[in-house]
Amino acid sequence: MNLWFVFALMTAVAIFAVLLPLGIGGRTQVGGNEAAVYKDQLAEIDRDAAAGLIGKGEAEAARVEIGRRLLSAADRPPPLPVPKSGGFRRVTALMALVGLPLVAMALYLPLGSPWLADFPLAERTRATDAQQPLENLVAQVEQHLEKNPNDGRGWNVLAPVLLRLGRYDDAVRAFRNSITYNGESAPRRADLGEAISAAAGGVVTSEARSEFERALALDADDVKAKYFVGLAAEQDGRKEEAAAIWRAMLEKAPANAPWRALLRDSLVRVGAPTAPALPDQTMAAAKDMNAGDRDAMIRGMVERLATRLKQNGDDVDGWLRLVRAYLVMGERDKATAAQTDARSAVGGNAERLKQLNEGLKNLGLDG
Image 1: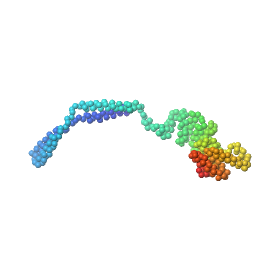
Image 2: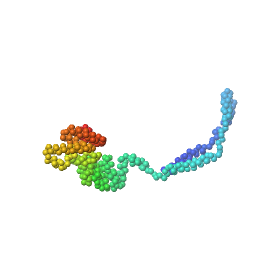
Image 3: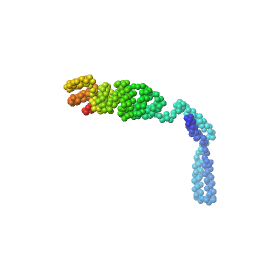
Image 4: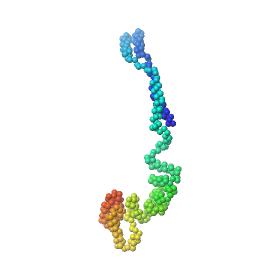
């Protein structure tokens, strides 16, 4: 229905509500003068008494009552005459017919939006982006990509969200399209490998491993690709290889890297110490040593680590390596002392203290 027609109808109803009382003029009382009525009643009583229809006493009582009413009506002031002129009503009607629409328009034009375009129902029921559920936003992006399949940026945004929502097959397709339209990179290859593994129930398939290896070919330090290559080794039963990969990653990881805890847990899962492996040159030299020399070399490395930690105690992994080394050498008292020193050194940093306590629990000590 046209908006202006609705406004016109509402205005007509308002005008009718104003004009209706004005169209009802003053009405004279039906039945004429009240005193004349009472006189007619007295005459009727006289006729009934003469005809014997009522007794003399009853007739007298009726005359007294009607006479009282007649006197009361005679004392009442006459009603004000209703003016016959309709000038006032005409002026009021004219104001209603012309004034009301003018006032309404004068208020609506500056305050309303008469030229606002139509707002379809689908748009009215659509919430703002910040208020919509994630699934609704994903559906909008997917609709956009159906019409614009070459939009690499859209695929790049959509793919990780699909992975997070558990739509793994769709995520694999989105990551492939992201690589197609945005170009190849180590993070995109690693993300694709992760999506393929997730679609396979967490198993690093040969296809997924191929993607991780392609990512490492582009960037040898890609963290996700290296971790999943280690996970593939673990799933294949090559736990030592997995431990070596994760140990090397842990050694190079920044102190505040969020994935350090994942590496430590993974090392514990394969039964490997969290301390990094000895350098290749040291390992080669140790093979040619006798037991006494090898033990002396290890103790020297442990002492150097302890000395370094006394100078810089912020290295949580260093403290954990030191505690484990003492445990392996059977020197539990030194391990307990190192544990106490480590807590004192990192006690001012809640995050590092939490990391230390978790590592101590993994070593079998109270955290």
